[in-house]
Structures are given as C-alpha cells and as structure tokens.
Image (cartoon, rainbow, N blue to C red; front, side, top):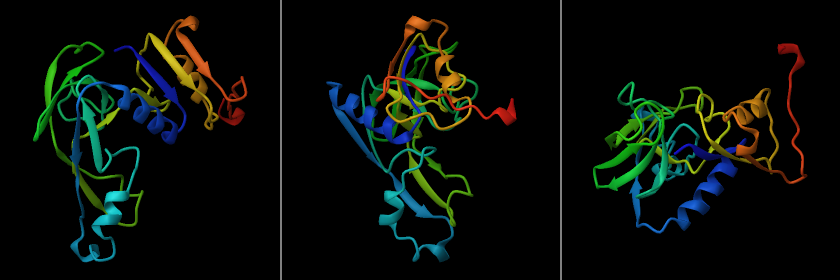
Amino acid sequence: MQRAILAPHNDSVGQINKLLAEKLPTQTHTYTAINSVVDEEQAVQFPVEFLNSIEVSGLPPHILDLKCGMPVMLLRSIKPPELMNGTRCIIHNCNRHFVEVVIAAGIYSGQHHSIPRIPLRPSDTMFPFQFERKQFPLRPCFAMTINKAQGQTLKVIGLDLRQPIFAHGMLYVALSRTGKEDSITTVSSQGLARNVVYTEVL
C-alpha cells in the first residue's frame, strides 16, 4: 500500500476515512474502549460519558469500527522495529481480543502480526487530568494528516487542500512524499494552494 490521501486537518481526514470505510464491502467489527481517570479522586469530576467523548489525534476513538481490507495506522510502538508508531497496515482478520494485521509498506511489508488492546494515555499537557483508554492502538488511514505522513514514502498521493495549509513547511512535506509530480492529485476549493513559510526560521 503505497498510496494515501493527505490533508492538513484532522477533521478532513476523519470525514474521508469515514466515507471510504463505508464503501468497503466487508463486515464492520465495532470495538468499544474502556475509559477511566487515572487518579481515582478525580473520577467524580470527569464522568465516563465525558471520557468516552474525547477525540484526540494520538488516541484511537472510543468506538472503533474496523473492516477486513481496511488500511490502518499504528498509534504506538508495540514491537520495534516492525510495529512502530506510524506503521501502516491492512486489517487481515478481526477477533474479539486481537486484530490481525499485515504490514503494508517498508522492509517488513507482508509480515502478519496480532495487535492486542492496550492501555493508552494522551500527553500529560493535553488535559488537566490523566485518563486511560484501553483500545486497539489503530486508526483507519485511507487518509492521514500531512504531519503523520512525515517519513512515509508513497507512490501515489491525493492531496486535499479544501482546508488550507496552516504551518511552516507543511506543503513541502506533502509534496515530497513522492518523487514524481504526476503522482500527485490535488483538490483545492479555490484552485490554488497557499504555502506557509516563516522566513525567520530560514
């Protein structure tokens, strides 16, 4: 799997992934996370319903829908060097307690691995409390953010710029994921893209 759709914003990525997942003809397997506050004394202040609603880029969703044949990205390094944060895989089989994946790119392409549910925490600075989400460390990745694409090598790119680039160097990162100009298809609401460059860092 050496193709992907890139977009600058998480909400665009989420919409694209949802749309393409719905078109995949295989059965949907739904996995519900277990969320809890780490400090029990704070548990009353932050009810489970609130924890369930939290959506951040470094965590899988509370409700994770997976399908066989779906491209996914690993959100944690669980078996270096094969299974690293950012490794792209294809769902091969969905079971109750583990998900079987096939590594989709790189020198370990084709390897089969079983991914368990693991406890995951967002960065400490993100919230005024610590919480833990036990879930499969996976997210669908028909599309991914440009930041997540750093370090990836792709043969074909769809670049969704309907929401504009917002950070220095982001457009360069997107365009440099493939070495061929004719391997990039770009969609923009205005027919052009604004490149963001902070001259003070050059």
